[in-house]
Length: 416
Image (cartoon, rainbow, N blue to C red; front, side):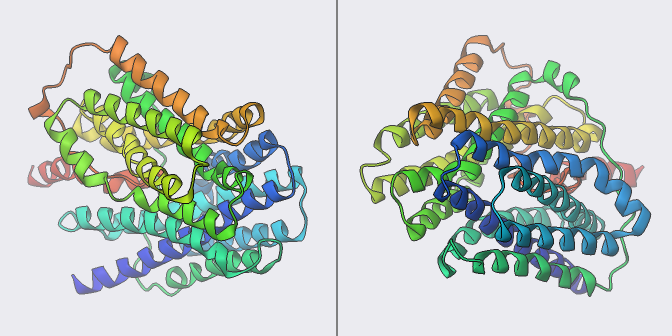
């Protein structure tokens, strides 16, 4: 057990370093493009390229890993990521930056597949729930703390690109020095979106909405903050508070969703996010304290939309379908996260910086209204609902294999 936990600690540390660098890089690029005066729709397209790259990486990374192995693949992905980061610092060209974001997204997905396949292999059923929780906490901490690294150097210089590249390089060390047995080559999950949409359309829609909202926020939050006059310290504080708050309400909301109809809970969450983002659009420029308070509430409440949506969908599928179902929902989130930056940027181009939050408010209000008006009586009784599991929004589809909800099925297979 001790050896297992130590090997998992190395992998989790690699995850932390990877997400720390990714959190810094995403906000840095968005901030830099805003300062350079690039149009908001162009920024949205470039930043959305990252999520498109992640979806592309989910297709090609499996083949590379099967051909050359996990450690060699991870080293190649990390090297490509570092190179892409350095090129960002050398020149600002929208077409080139879009290509670099595609590359960074694809290589990030490849690294996540390596890390998560290793975690899945080493996480025995008895500790799977704890490993899953640690992974989620580290995901939020890495992305959140990465925002504060913006204060280490001038955004106009090369130092922050070097720091981000350094973190991407260092995340390779625990993987390269690992003495554990390589996991088996990963297998891709089948996509059954049409089937899931028939079973639980509002749960699938909730995953899409979560992608639209947070894809737009991560990509354009720094642009919004720049346009309302915040300095680098204020931008990092705003983004950091919003991201880190996402960890706070996961378990309280999850506990609530286990005792009440999940569609009612999801409708309430969407309505609250619609109100909070509307308040951010209208009151965000009234002072730093209201801005941070509203951003924290938005980040905390909004971060629960995706896991509650996933939990609602899993109520309608059999135990052995949970892994492929979760994988499909992660891809659905990715589609939303790819489109969100572009749509949010279009709202900003028309309405000004607060258009970002008007976009989020409209999306969530429409989704909440559709659920309230179009929903049918619950087909799954509250007492028959699957237990809620807090879920990170980062990573590959392989992380769904570590979902504690799959344990009972595995235990039944072993017993038979």
